[in-house]
Length: 144
Image (cartoon, rainbow, N blue to C red):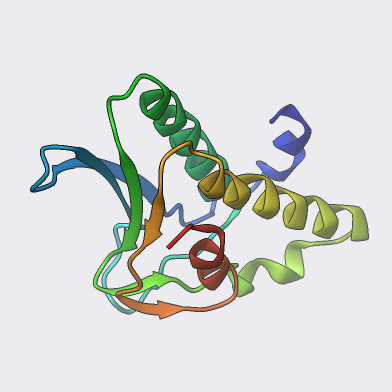
C-alpha cells in the first residue's frame, strides 16, 4: 500500500468509514456487515476517496483473516440510509494535476475493490440507495 501514499496529501477528504458489525444468522453462522458511512446527513453521499479506499482495503484484509480463522462465514456491504456510495468525490477532480496521479487513483480503486471477491467466504452487497460509479463497482466486485 506504500505506492498509494502520494495520494494521501488531501486533509480535506470527507472519509467514508467502513464500520464492521457481526450479525448472527439463523444458522448460527456469522456474517460480517460493513456499513459505509461518512458521518454526514443525507445531503452528503458516501464517496470513495483515497483514504476511504485504503481503509476499506484494510477492513477487507482483516475480514479475510477472520474468514481464514473461521470466525466469519460471509461478508456483506451496505451504506447509510439512501446511499451505498456515489463513487469518486467529483469536487476533488480539479486537484488531479498529472495523468499519473489519476491513474494511481484508479489503480487504488481496483486494488481495494477486488479484495471483496477474494475473501474466501461469500460476499454480498445490499444496495440500499444511490450506487454510482465506484459505488456500483463495489457491488460488481461482490459475489452476490
